[in-house]
Image (cartoon, rainbow, N blue to C red):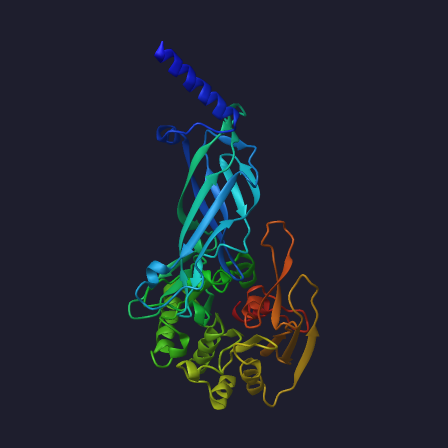
Length: 461
């Protein structure tokens, strides 16, 4: 009799608990019985650097999903470089620990794509060593509510499906996947895009100071992930303009300001010549581009090797600060010597640049190159959301050009992005130093409407 009373009391207690909204505790065995699905991180390189912009769930070939919305999952993301920096005295300014906002859900076959706000989720972290470094990413996917699981023919397998989702935290990026990492012992590492057999053109890119190697890590990816300075040259758009071209994107062992001190000019030239020989590149069909410290490196290469490049696109060249940072600011005589070569040059910078002074960098270089020549000036307006207005100066023979972009009252440059997946470009503002973004969008243009990359292609086609 006692046993029967106890059983009844337990039954009543459970009934009261459930009526009050409490759920019975799930056992570990029940949790383990849940289906487990894998998730893959997908990324894209934006103008401001690579971000994880999508998480794709693989259900398996025999399963489909329905009734999933933006609130079905919580995606928690952390990024850190603390492990790499431990004991170095350096710190990260780019670590984060956040919930990523799901903006859209798309289902296609077995795949469920969770599209994320692309204004967050960087794969690099900027450190107090003034360098970007690849962060260790950890994504945790939590299911908040059930969805409908179906077979490929539409039969419902589970109307209240709950599961476990795991992520290996590697990143898939179709643009960076085009490149091969080439490491050169004692030389300069670089990323290389092979445009195919029989291609006889080459584009060389020198990154800015923030993308140099850090603590001799040999990472050889920061220059590809920090902005579009590597991947843009291999884009379908640019490859079509060039009629196909190989791409070589160096990573400074530390900084390009050490170009002369560490023999980087000779090393870069030797490696470019190695690529020319290996891939059958026409030495007369080599283009070069660089930004900031990479603009300084590009300028130094033009001075040291006047016959190496047919055309150069130089963005905000950091000439004025070079001496203070371990390099050598080019003299007027050195810059004037570039005129003796056949290299055509287009300079790009913000009209006001708070990182390197426009008048002492691109304007100074343009004035020296065009000394004694007549130049024309064109004000080019742009509608927003779009890019900033520009003024382009050019010589009559089209050999030398300079585009200066207007800055806002707050000292910013205007750009347009689609971070929210709605297909509509909206205005964003970045540092007045980031003028290389315009070149990488093929935006600078001459009075006759010719854009910078099309102009450059004319010298190597």
